[in-house]
Length: 392
Image 1 (cartoon, helix red, strand yellow):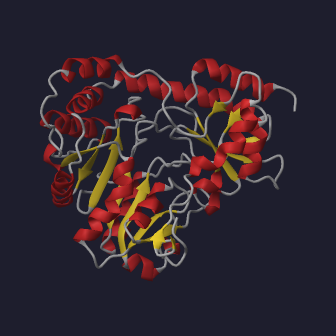
Image 2 (tube, rainbow, N blue to C red):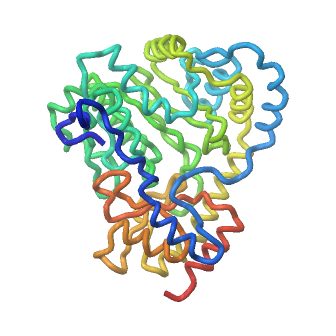
């Protein structure tokens, strides 16, 4: 994250990258590895469940045909599959021409501010949730822009009233994340509409990270319908979607943008010049995945089951989930010891062989919390439950 002044950190005239967040967890890993059976790493939300057969089959069937360059914007088949999925999932119509393939979505989050700032150089600020994926802020920093956090309320939703008017007037991008990483909070359609109109009223582009839209649940843990910024028109909207978690395809790096046709056209041309291309077999696999909902239903149920089994065991230790019901993360706070911060929670769990991410990795307001990803193979989940149940 850039300093409060918005200045990019420099030493001797050059940019010095800060330590990567997970690189700070070395001691926690060391402690957890000493527990018999080794560490159970829940600090990174990397998929651990099988890639769907429909995806593997599409990769195999198309690999030998990938002798030429793939289309940078995405094949018609991929873009049509993405538009069809958006219609099924959100009941929103999107023209396939307003869909753009990307090499996973982290590269979009990190690179979008730079590309958009070339188009609109008089805007120099990126607004993003104060508790969120660290790459939102880093993308602004890499673009030489000001990274300004938007305060969040007690339920981890954006508090737009707390945004300084001068920052709002300079905003190039307003990042949304729904359902949210790390908190699991999800906006209502009404809240999403208010946020979109707030950004439009200030001339900012809405970049809506909706990568976890398949994993929305109600307070009782039952599947619930998601919301999308595109439900309120596509003017000034870029919705960001990924196959990494939806279809356990993180290693294949496939995602897409959808939204404002002018913005999509601009980004498509720039990315074409830069040679940003998703390999053709990966595009075919992504299209196959987007056309199949059965494997997603299974994955959604897996995460709900893991949540239902882990939450009581953690609560017995005084660790309560303090976020929303969606996504596949637990946002833990120690309700048994109010002096314990996120690093203290992480140390407590590391002594039981479980690695979690302290909450301040996601922003200063997360200092009291730690994030546990429900990306745990079933065999290791049983071991985690045994460790949590062991005497202190």
